[in-house]
Length: 416
Image 1: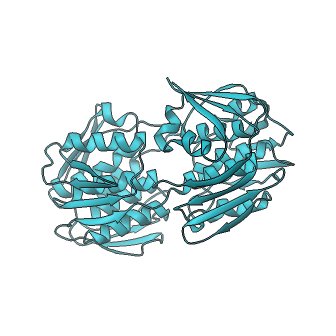
Image 2 (image 1 turned 180 degrees about the vertical axis):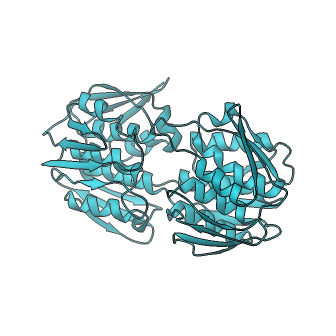
């Protein structure tokens, strides 16, 4: 099992190229199930989760070919509308095949999902929405069995804001009879990216980027070309790394407007940020100032950046109060950060971090994807060597993080 060894105390300087967004690429790959024509996708990140999704889709009969920097998907020969447990257990996003399969083929059999142990993340909103569109759904032996001769447009109000729920229902509605209105829809940039692809494929969607989506179903969707948006969480993670270690780094192929709430907090820490159409520069000269925040749905502060900014707060001047409102089990990184010398206390959904002058390297263990990123950030700022175990979590969502950090001066290496 691979580990990361980080010797901290090195200032970072140079440029990092940001990859395509994992959370946009996964639903966009599933959109290949909606048409018999070819989708040409650019800027698809090379990640473990993306590889797992491709393996699942190929198993169903979706053709996926690499042509240079492009992925070409063709759904002409889908033969198995099933997502088995062996494929789904490692990645919750596999639930995103449910809507497209049901809409195009009239049936789907999808295992209840697994993935990171950060909370329950129920799929009941997906099921409720598809049932409202006329689907018959049975949950039996750990599988969702769904059938519908033809989905019908309707008004759907989800009980909570759900990103994958919005994406699943939007894809299903694109081929349904009549108009579907999704109220309380997620507004994340990754949802908007999927909607823009669907429109390029011939879907009729109004209200893109808002919490009310109106989708008028069409008989069939056609092929299209699309470039996946930049990964705002990878962007935010590297910004936190530079703010924690100190230095001057330019991030390429990304946009500041994808993570306004994070950029605002980083400015509060004392970091100097400038940006253009496809780049962000962060300069940090001294010790950061502590910042408090509350996670919430987009455009608020993202839960996927909570652990990384907490790592920055560990060495900041002052104390910070963090409230996690999205996932009930997302403080598993706290005990590992405390092993490095951080002073964090948890009370329910609230974490209070008292900044310390220094962290000291130690062996730590990654517990989930973003927790592993927080340990990398802490390791970069710590004195001595930090050894991070279970970095397969990191590889699920970051494309060769150690290579990108080494290029800007970090002392970090993968131990196989």
